[in-house]
Each structure stands twice: as structure tokens, then as C-alpha cells.
Image 1 (tube, rainbow over the protein chains, first blue to last red):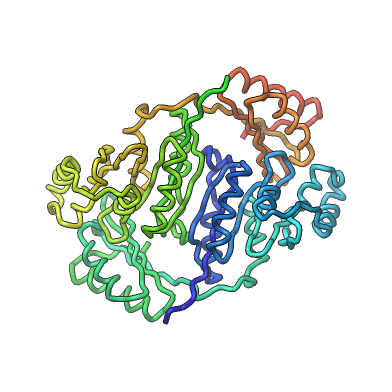
Image 2 (image 1 turned 120 degrees about the vertical axis):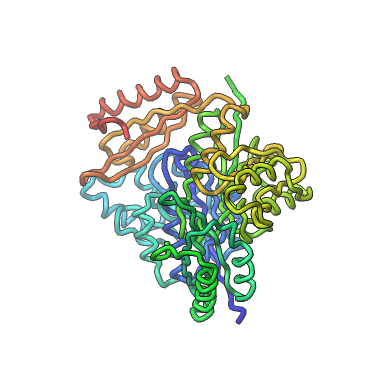
Length: 251
Length: 251
């Protein structure tokens, strides 16, 4: 029963997230994509556009996870330092990737040509492979277990799409949400005991305030469908037995 | 001219963020609040509901920043382990705070009384002070430079509100956004040179695709208003000189 759990970490690189100017969308997007691949997002760090901060985060996380993703900082401008920082973390030189150069050449042929600034987007840590980008000119980059993605969410999504099915993972985490009109503090014991009774299941409790009433969603998670259903059904029955009104449609 | 820069870090505690189920709103909310206090959000870590992960993040970040905030995991259920984890990080025992107990007693007087599960929300690392919570019963917690906030964004917002003006900070970072209908790769040199010409200013470049056209916002940041204006005006003039159409209203 003890299966291998595959994990990934994400380093979000961007002053714009830390300043509050831009709301990150890549954490949720990557987490959902990883779930389908049978990989768990284990930790996220959001760091500024500062080389030492990127190096520290990348080196800490790439070693203790099966996969490491980064988003942001791969464009043509002076604040795009991700490739240099990751190459420094890996202690390898930065080189121009011939296929990336070709892709950029083709993309910019009708857009004013490949300038020096644009050629920056063909730079990779030596030994890296490319991740296709069908949205714009600059490809993503793969180096070992590191995946360097764009920061713009729809471009990152395209790169993830290109990676779908190519990463080894374990069993996807399945979940069921049981909602009830109850203050979570009233059924804390029930939750704890139910989780304990079903080994391999975790239950998260997320309160909400809606229509002037207090309720909570209990998210039951497991990799085994039968186990998940048994636990979620038991929780649902126990809540009904206590006279707690279910929230229609779970969430 | 070299002023002291005050920094803060945030540890977001929550399986629900890492699973992709819930979109975090506390990063943006805290970042914006900190800006007004003259404090910069320097790093964020999102960690699961696992004590060792919380301990590691808290101990790494509380030392190298002026302030450390956490969000999430202070409710009454079994998955709320933030207080125990932070007490473990600080190597102090967990005790029931008398004022927190009183506040919970008052809050739950008309709601079924103070059960053992609810009393969990009065537990604090020994020596901690409370942060008022006007939305619900459980207070936030302050211990030294650590601020333990709720995960539910509007409750966290109320706690931040209670802290407004109480933390020492430096000069707020001011910003102006200059938008233009131009591919950022076409003016990468201009951006780099402009930033270099105005010491103390940083320029971030954020491309977008809208109305079928490529554009970018250039966010100019500085703590000095005159310096900020000089740089933003110079950038605006240089873009106009190159015939780049401005984006109405900046953003």
C-alpha cells in the first residue's frame, strides 16, 4: 500500500508579485496540472528579481523534490535574469541554443528581425533542452529536473500543455468535498476521528460565511477511490446523523 | 541617501493552496498593506500543513527579515497546526492566553459555548500577545517579530487593519506605470539605459496582448517622488520620440 509519492516545487520569480501589483495565477495553474500528472506540489517560493535569491531557492528545492518549476523572468529585458541565475545555481555557462535561435528567427522574421535583445531569449544553461512555446517566440527550458516556464499565465499554460504526459508520476490525488451548514468548531472531534479511522486519507476543513450563515467544506483526499468514497460517505452519514444540513452541491 | 530598507516575509500555510483548490489572496493583500507601512515584502513561501515544513520556513525567514507574517492554520480543527509549529520553531511551550479565552468565551456565549475544540483557538506560544479580530472569535497572535494571521482573507484583512501604523517602516515605495503599444524586446536597451541613468530607480517590464496587439507596461519604482517623476517622464519622452503610441491610462 505504501506507494512512491512524487513531488514538485515551484519558484515564482517576480518583483511584480511581491509588490502586490500582479496577482499570481501560476501556483493554482501548476498545482492543478501536477495533480493530473500524479505529482504533488510540495512547496512554493516567491522570490524577487535578484540573482542570489533565485539561486538559493532553486538549489534548496531542486534537490529535495523530483521536479522543480520556475515561472517568470525569461523575457528580453534587463529584469529578466532567470536563465543567468539558474545557470549560476547549476554552475554551468549560459549558451545560445541553436534551435531556440531558429525559433526566434522564424517568429521575428515578420516582426522586425532578431535583435540582440530578442536573442537573449535563446540563451539557456549549457546542456538544456527546449520546451515548445506555441504562443510566442521564446521557448521554455528544461535542464534535468528543472523546468523554466514563462511568467505570463497563458504562455506558461501552453508550455505545461507541451509537457503533459511526459513526466513520471504516481497515483493522482483524488478528492471529494463534503459541505455542511455547521461551524467547523462544532465538529472538530468528528473530523479528527474520521481522518484517523481511514488511514491514507486526509481531511481539510475550510470554513465560509455565506447567506448570513456559517458553513464549512470538508475536503477529503486520497489516492484510492474506494477508500476516498468510504471515508467521504462515512463523514456525510455522521453529519446527517448529527442533523447538520448539507450544503447543496458540496462547494 | 542610503536609507534603511525594512523587509517582511510571508509564510502561507495551507494544503488547500498547494492542491490548487483555493487561490491565495493573502500575498497581494499583505504586499499592498506593507507598501503603505514602508515595508517591502521580500519573500513568500507556501508550505503544507506539516509541522517540519512550517518550522523550517519560519526559522529561515524570521531571522533575515524585520517582520514575518503567517496566514492560515489557526482554526479549531485537527489540520490547524500553526500555533504548535511556531511554538516548536521558537522552542517555547504552548499555553492558553487568558484574554483570548475571554474573547472566545464572549463570542461563543450565544453560539453553544466554549468547547474544547474552540478553546484550541486561545492557544499561543508562551509570551505572545494578541492581535484583535473583530470578525470572528479567534484572535491573531504576535510573538516578537512574528505575526500569525487567519487564512480567510477578510479576517486576515481585519487583523492587518488592527496593526496599521504600529510597525516601524521606512519610506514607502512609490510607483508610476508607463504603458506603450510596443513589444518589450524592441526597447530593451532603452529600458536598461534609463534605469541605469537614475540611481535608486527600478523599472519592471510587463508585456501584454490586448485587442490583437502587443504592448507592455513599464513600472517605475523609487522611494523619492522627484526621482520617480524624473525617470518616468524621461521614459515617456523617449518612447514618444521613438514614435511608440502610449497606452491610455497607463495600466
